[in-house]
Image (cartoon, rainbow, N blue to C red; front, side):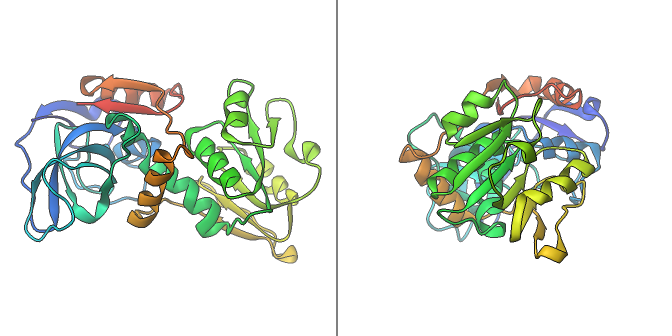
Amino acid sequence: MRAVQFREVGGPEVLRSVELDQPTPTAGQVRIRVAASAYNAADGGMRGGFLPIPVQLPHVPGYDVSGTVDALGDGVEGLAVGDAVVGFLPMERDGGAAEFVVAPAEALVAAPTSLPLADAAALPSVALTAWQALFDEGQLRAGQRVLIVGAGGVVGKYAVQLAARAGAIVVATASPRSAEAVRVAGAHQVIDHTTTDPLDALDGQVDVLLNLAPIEPEQFAADVAAVRDGGIVVSTTAFMATPGDDARGVRAATVFVLPNRERLTELVSLVDAGELTVEVTRRIPLAELPALHAEAEAGRVAGKVIVLP
């Protein structure tokens, strides 16, 4: 089968298009005929060797995947050959940048039926990140106010949709390029971060501050003033510390996405109910994945890109 793989960590040049034996599922696993995998920034981090994830080398990237069940290992229940599935695969193992991948059965759920199967690969880890940040860590509830910094990115737009659906009042920062998309996602107020300090634009403090952007640590620390006493600051930028304010009881939490089959099933249901929009900005063939990594390293990838085998 065709795949893209790296045998050592390094720059995008370590990625190679290769021919590999088709994998065989063992007990508790299934083999998926891949419809698509999704590119995530963490793929570049693992390839570059600067994320603390014990990647098994050689490694096939692409931990978000959609496809069709092709074969079952022993003991697998609840899935059948031919089922359309989507999943967030174990990040340290081979991913979906290939024609086939084996995956633990518990990592997979039924794919949305309201969009093309390939596009479903754009959903799992980014939507789970938004959910876990807002609700599992942020404990966001209806009627509360949330400030989402960096709402114009893929996770940000999922976060805006989920927070608005939960009945929260959503204030979001975005650039002029993404402001309208953030409004459409459900933000009640959009602040242009290129011209305005969020603290100057807020008409009151928020219960939850969710940071999704690589802002300067000094700016991040200053933004904590936007949070009410007893509130929480949540961040997905694991490369820098999340600030809080002990004197005011403002808690700090950093989120690194975790697999959650129950939550992913719920997110799929929201997609099929028309309550959550899946963003796919580009679709590229597998052979172009090394070039995409190089593009991302130069800082030019916008939106969500899926990779078709």
